[in-house]
View: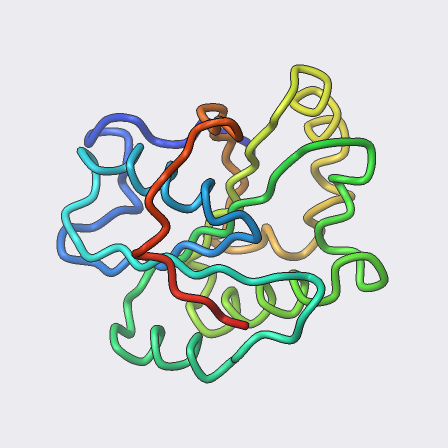
Length: 166
């Protein structure tokens, strides 16, 4: 159930031409870098959304983005940074992320990728050991976990295209 994030057009069967791609993350830089990595593979519109575990998010903006294209595909970037990274969907540690991902999966009929962005070799190995426990029912249907290892936290990016859900 784990695969690498797509890098070439022939590897992106889930990315249909003209389809809107909604990408969500708690890290603005990761959003922009992931969009840049998909530049050659995505023919449709890409929208970037930033949210935080520290503040409630504006569900109206999520609904509006989904309603604009009923066949949208979502990706949620999950940064694997340390020992508690695998708690992305734990209701006590990350209730906002859990609510957002559950909503996206339900509203988009499972057209969602959970894109794990390991920041160290250790974090890359750690999350893979617990895939079923981490994702549970969120990986049912067409939802899938993919790994994208090109994130560089030191790289500066233009965050102008990122929509805040706060």
